[in-house]
Length: 613
Image 1 (cartoon, rainbow, N blue to C red):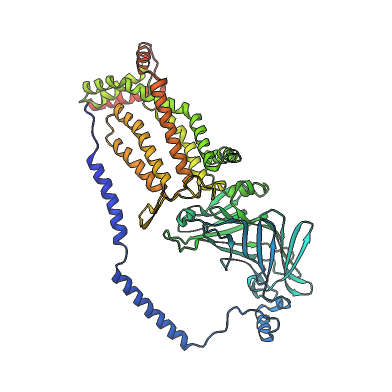
Image 2: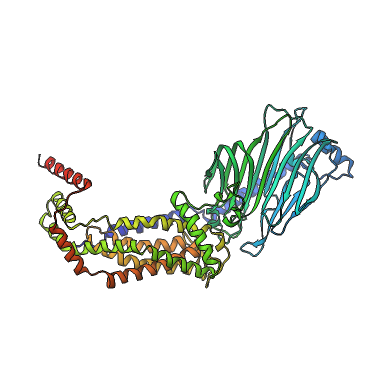
């Protein structure tokens, strides 16, 4: 049978699709005239709004600063918050810190207004903040005995900082009387990112008919050089109903309500803000909104998260033990709190893929990186993985060799039954059965490798140990490497050129020439295989240009090793003449059909009978 060449129509189709995408991308951008018209219209609207606001009396400030020496301001505050005007606190913050974490807690709202990690910096070498400049808010809605609803973010709390052994304890009290108050109690321990957080009240006599609403909101601050890449792993995750872990959508807007919630994580790729509770919350509503539209150095925030729940009231009071975690999304740190199971917030992957990532690759790489440079540790891990997977590679290549040996007989069958596809299929299957060869045997080893490949695909972007670790020209193995900065941005590619993806694409091209080329020889009825051989490296080049350079390094080394293993198998281990002799001996032996083969033969025979009728 004549071997079919590359399908030109397929090439044209793919080129047209790619061209249409680019055309759509550029034609949907507004023209300069439309941009100017929009600007003028916006200025007109702003002028109109400004005139309307100027004609109205200026309203008083919605949230005046409380000055204890200003009797007018204090009277206004007292009329606003009623009994809680008993507090003697004004504006100010209190520093709560240990050797790894620094928290600023504001008198207003009693909440954390700044959370800084002392040991880490972002891509601009600036300190890493999870909370800063009003990007987060936390508060309760209290219903008083006179049915007034007060948000604690508007109340002023009196701070009291003390020490209990090596721990720092900060008590924040919003006073409603000498023995009536709402208290937030923060306890920070040396060397820990977890802060104990207790909420309790005394003498407030709140209605027990319903719980006290609690709201927590946060806009995730950008920390990585590629905001699109960071945003892919920035996600709201929570544990509920025992050990179930769920996530909101990684893009767009999403919301969900769950019961029996143990913790809520606002994950920002390599850093997390987590609120955990000792006793599960009965019901929590989660919301997430994606703030990133395109890759831009000006983007300051990635996503907006919020949760809403209620704290139960017992005997007219609140008493709840909680924990704040402001720190790295690092398994070595999070596993220090096994009772809370915070390590489950790391996106290892689902099912067996996540298990392999978490319990095999993560500790194994950690062991190698403990005495090797981080880049060399990736190379060594890759070599070991490929050697362990070499038996699977051998099985795959052996199957391809058997198919090559049988190719003349398969071609002869094709010529003999070229006008009867059913007969040709039956004769081919009979040959396979007699020779003890299965065309699917080459696919099974490839399927066995999928859990390994996927686990590694999830390992590199989420491994905290790779963050800001350099190797060769790559400054950060957890982000993309850059050898050239482009003066423009290419759709789906970016505004830079990464070298590791180029090397990986070249390696996979030669690997596919060896594997796909052999499949085209043994299975000539697959005209698009050659196109796939060219398309796959191109797709990798585009896709991995903005991915972790450590992952591209792995694929580059992995494909080089696989090529070497296949050359050794082909030229040293396997002898096609011996394989041919073994197949001929196998064909002489009586061979019983298995159940699947019998069913397939019976179905084909029945189809042939139906055709003759």
